[in-house]
Image (cartoon, rainbow, N blue to C red; front, side):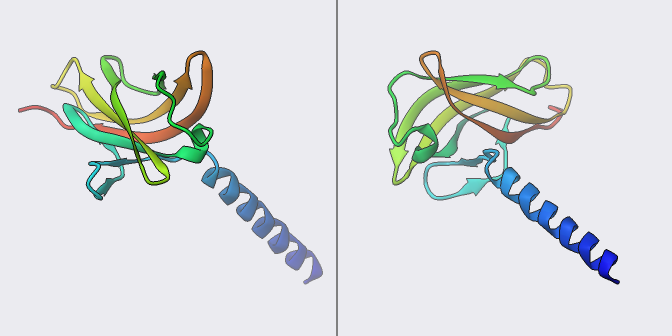
Length: 133
């Protein structure tokens, strides 16, 4: 009984530690800038913004932000169009494109937000695109 209790306690401690690590990993949300939130970015869109807490960017919204992406299918890209500040968040408006609309996109993008050569934060967000018929 004592061994089982110790195992359960260790498992719970690991679960909480893992949960906290995931919470700090930078899961981002998309927004339309008018209060609606989305779980993903969608291909062939230029109306969504990635919502990032200003604290993750050092508390300010630098003028020279750029994005570096990984985890996207070949031919899929995310381009930064503009930025704005909304309360305690930075909204990074992006265009999501792909070269081949005859294939589905179901990716998890890792987006590093940079100011000059300095990486400020990295966030993850799903990117979806259906087959164009």
